[in-house]
Length: 83
Image (cartoon, rainbow, N blue to C red; front, side, top):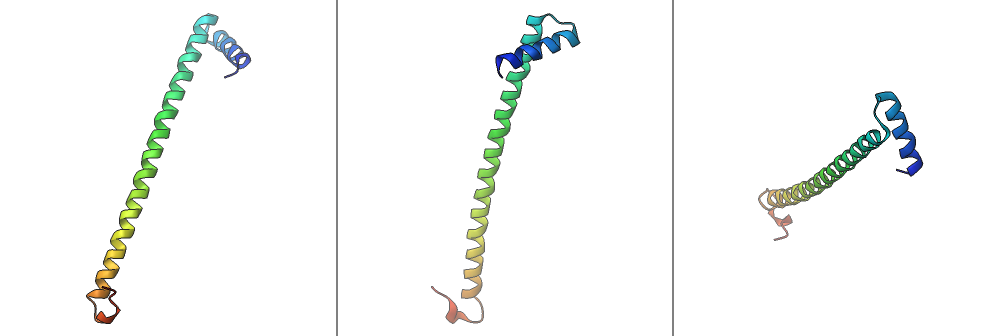
């Protein structure tokens, strides 16, 4: 956050809560740090979700191909079997 914005925000917090300027600045710093931490946790969770979703799609495609090959090779028209 730019210094001017932080100063303005700490002034507003100090006026509305009755805190001193340094206490307001400490509160803003704590909230900002918590927001960054929460954003990092959400980013990591999103990355894990994307990885597991892609992996499950890959496994599903493999199973579908295997099932299709099994159906062709064990069906009525065995001449279509590539094996």
